[in-house]
Length: 203
Image (cartoon, rainbow, N blue to C red; front, side, top):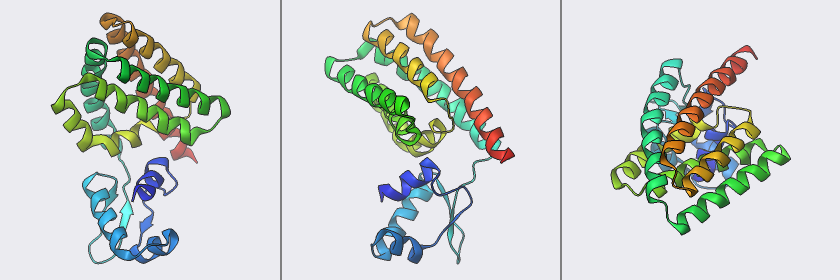
């Protein structure tokens, strides 16, 4: 049920909103069984909070949750970007370039939803380029929450620009430059996420 996951990550289904099996099944034109299975998966992925004997709700991430995600993201991505620069392949680099091209095209058109998704794809591909099985395993466990975190901003052009710089440094295998850019990118992201959440709370 990728549709339901994408709607939560994209914010189409707002934090705290009810997720009632029969209503979702009717919306998506499916039976209740795949919806029930999808909700169980989304609970395990950290995107949905179960409410026994009633309905599930879209998770409302607290400031503490966001801080925890940022700390873990910082550790994992610093390593992922460094390993990607050391181990990238021609095929992996081509995939990374395709993700970035789609992100930049969406940003230029003002298509925020696609720009956010392709930016998250860029980060996922970087983890693939790192070629570390344990890192990929950890990424799989956290992927949905990290994709949600990566979407908490509105500055599409800035992130596309920073990804372009990271791509060029990975392409050049310039590990020191990648370390510098990754630290800058993480700092930018933390600041933009904080601003996005403040603005959302003011609405």
